[in-house]
Each structure stands twice: as structure tokens, then as C-alpha cells.
Length: 149
Image 1 (cartoon, rainbow, N blue to C red):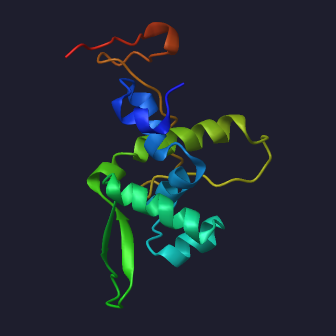
Image 2: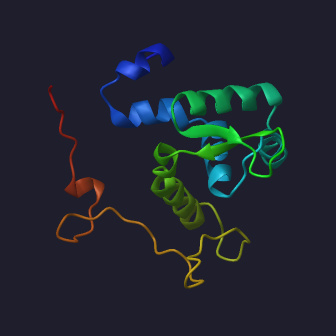
């Protein structure tokens, strides 16, 4: 089992991704940032996370370039955390986790939130990996290829 310090050298992209955004708080911070939360206090209230843990995760996400700090949009002295382009590219990951949870972790009649397309007002179509020719891909139809540099 690799240690936290060895993960930056881990050749597996999944392991590297999990080392950055795979813990509960980091992933939920990213989710909240997509939902428009920007300030430390708002993250803390929404997540119910301890200040020291939130501070640590925010620093980690900023250092990794997932979030950026900027002056508050309302002109106050506060700083805000906003998704960078790198952070924005996590959107499909958040959607995939949301859709998996909707499909497997709720009963049919249980209330939950749903992601909708603002333009149509309809639920976002279930994401599936597809081949270049449009075929749906599964674990059985793909394989990991190690790349030597």
C-alpha cells in the first residue's frame, strides 16, 4: 500500500486523483464550489466540518490548483475560493458520483436532489463512457495500458 508521500510518484492516475480529491471533505468542498459556495464560513456551515480540517483541505486544493483565491466579489475584505479551470474539469467526476448515488443509494420514493439542465429544465442524462465510434464501454470492454516514458 503506497504511503501518502509516495502517491505523487504513483503511476496510477486513479491513485493520484484520490490522493488529492478522494477524501470526503475535499470532494464535498469541490461539490459545494460547483454549487456556488465561495467563502470559508459558508463552506463550514454547509458541510459542518471543523475549521482546522476545512482550512487544511482548502489549502491543499489551492496548492494543487483546483481552487483559486480571489478578492470577494462584493468588494468586502473577504477572500473567496473559486474553481480554477483544473477544478472545473472535475465536473464530470462529480456528476458521475452523483448519478451513481442516485441510482444505488436511494429508494425509488426517497427524496433527493437532482442535477438538471438549466436550458431544458430536464434531468441530466446518465453518463456512460463511450468509444470513439459511440459504443457504450464497460469494464469488460476496456483495459488499462501501462505507458513507459
